[in-house]
Length: 174
Image 1 (cartoon, rainbow, N blue to C red):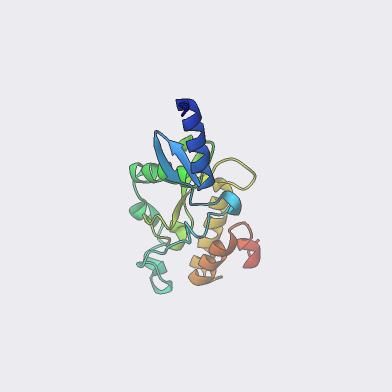
Image 2 (image 1 turned 90 degrees about the vertical axis):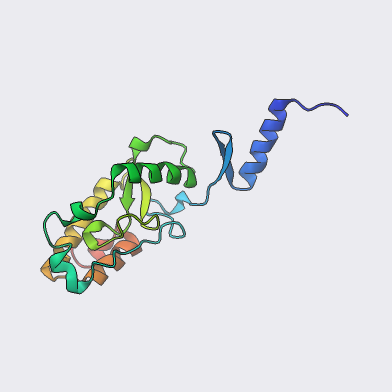
């Protein structure tokens, strides 16, 4: 039986892994379990969002509506960077430079999103027409509306979870 060269075996193995939804990185296989099809939103099966149980409609005056409160719950950059590296692989991004992504809270801290849950953090691209910077503007306007009593916390969260790009107009705030 003829011997198959290592390069052919490697190529065939990579093809088989790709067909199975896996990639080869640093000699190991990793599942590409999250889809980029939802961008500029995260894949809801990977990051459906999660809430901080300390933030409710009745606690907003002592939590999110207090200037500087989010700094008290924001996770460390070492935590978010490590998670970002893992999730960049899970999303199958070809650009793996961590500086091209913000490890963003799907439900923002400003609306009582869970600070450290991987269900609420995802690597949001800093490129394209709808970026993390655009989402930050929406988050700030929603927080102001919640604190002013214009919309409820639940309404703001639902609007973000549905589609942050239309959240303001859906709530009549744009």
